[in-house]
Image (cartoon, rainbow, N blue to C red):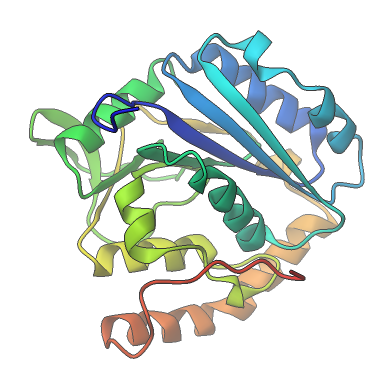
Length: 256
């Protein structure tokens, strides 16, 4: 297919337990997506019934816009960066012009995908997504599209859409941060280094996997990993900007 005519997006989701949230998120994806997409799910060794549910999932029956479904089941939790990388590797065989990461605990807005594609088509060096943060950013018009422009920091992979050109330029997620950490911040710092800008659509998404849905042992684990990885992340930033560490990260998946 002529890449200029191909508007398909590879949507990549990593799951780990919390099946009830995954169900809600996929319902939103099927109902709110009205542009061609492929669904790629990597399950990181869930201990609940997620794997069985995902094996029986039939996305092409749920949405006329879903063109294919790839499912990768890891035997154990290999970490979010490894999960994202496996999804990216699967997406590479399709060579779709747009790539999207999303968590399994978000709710989308109507028309989200065509809106994101329009931002990228008119601004080839933009990453765009739905804002899941607690703060909004300045509404800015850029080349005929309106976005929340984020001048500094990260575009969390809870929901992002970016052109394949970015993946070609910076590669895969950094697995140096362990099972959970600053892999998303690291990815989009590298994006900024090579000239990409971070933005959100004017309308915010909903991150429902917080509050009472984000408590207990797993929440404690994530908080601990975040604290442990901050110093390493800051060091990586200095190295990227100082050209002491390669911007392009090769494919890596823990235990492979």
